[in-house]
Length: 112
Length: 114
Image (cartoon, rainbow over all chains, first blue to last red; front, side, top):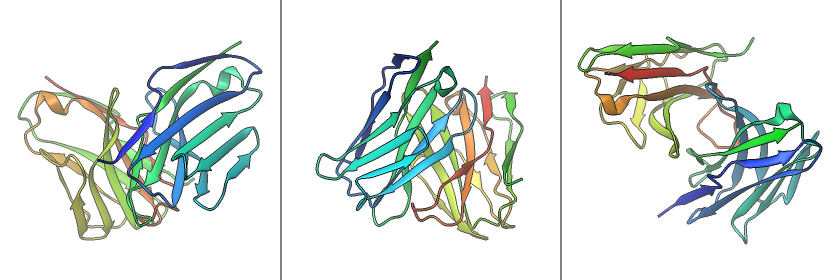
C-alpha cells in the first residue's frame, strides 16, 4: 500500500546549525512534492514545491531535494533559528498529479 | 488578504447533537477540502469539492456531510457527533485539485465530543 514516512521523533538542534528533515515514500510516483510548516494549533502554511525533474529547490534559508530513485525528499533549514521551531509536513500527489497526500510531519525544536 | 476562515475555532459538544463547522475562502478557488488531524496520523481528508455542487468522499468520510452551494463556502456537518470525532479539523482551498497548486488552510477547529 502507499505510504509516506516522516520521522515521528522530534528533531532537536542548536541555533545556527542546519536542520535536515526526511520524507520517504513507497508505492508512489509523485510528479510534485510540497513542504509545509505548521505551528501548534494552526493550519499548515505552504513553503516550497519541487517537481520530479528538479533535483533541488531553494528559497532563502530553505533547500529541498527530491530523489525519485531513493523515493525520498530532504528538507534543509540552514542557519536555523528558534523561530524555525515548528512541525514540517511533506505532501505529494497521490498519482496523476491529483489529490495531495500529507505526511504526519516532523517536529523541529531549535534551541537558542 | 487572501484567507480561509473557519468557525468556530473551538467547540465542545455532546454526543448526538448536530453541529456545523463553517469554512469560507476569498480567493475564488475551485477546490476545497476538509481534513482532520490526529496525533501520529497526520492530515486525513474527509471530503473534497472540485467545484460548486461537486463533492466527493475522501479517506475518512463516515459520520460527516458537506455541501458546496456557493464557490466560497464549504461547511462540514456532523449529523450525530460521537467521541471518536474529537479532533482538530482544517478546511483548505486551492486553485484546483492538481498537486502543483499549494493548499491554503484555515486556522483550524478543535472539536471535543463528550
